[in-house]
Image (cartoon, rainbow, N blue to C red; front, side):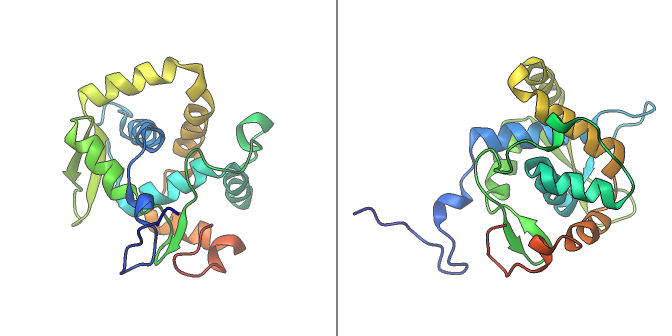
Length: 189
């Protein structure tokens, strides 16, 4: 019988804290989509709260469609939003500020450690932003050419176009979803 190791402080199985190639690719594409230049200005994805909320919407297209509808945006591409609900690798959990994936620290550490993503201080706040490095941008461009990532890339574009809001605003949108608001801490969403 295989024993599953559990983190004693959270009672979450330890394997959920590990990085995966799928998660690293998804977050690299998400960070790259939000850190590309707009109007000649360098950008970054502002903070882990925003990253987690955008990743939740990227992974759960039915929730993305409901949030977009709640702000008056209708996407006509059914393939983009009505795909199978299950995320690519694992389900997110409810934490203090909404959906969270326990593997974020490992995933971000891997992307940063391999020189694909850089962390930079945000202007006028104590927060941190994430942006792709030139190597990360090049890899994201190559991955974007692979058709297996076409839906992820299309959703990232929708997120940037319609939901490039603060982490707090995105959190408010998600708390209007009963599946998020009514879940308990550490419960899978």
